[in-house]
Length: 93
Image (tube, rainbow, N blue to C red):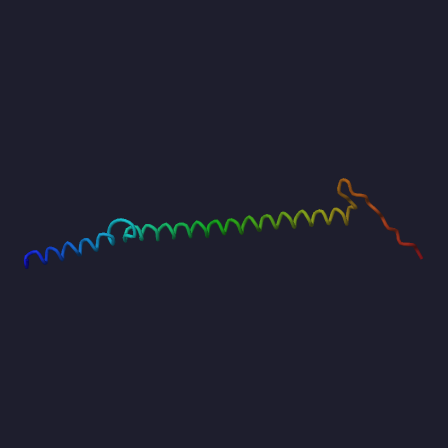
């Protein structure tokens, strides 16, 4: 019996350590998941930068077209297709 006790304790320790080293929830799996999280976070940051760049580009295009349209209306008297232009003349002195 005394000879088997250390062997049984060793086997018990190995059995308890099995999940730590192999299988679901193992240290290797945790490390792989942490690596995947870091990669996904970097991808998210890259996409956020791209979205911000695209949003700025859209804003520039919108403002550019609006500014161009305003200038064409005010300075050149242009109107859109289908609009009716009314010119109000103030009475002279």
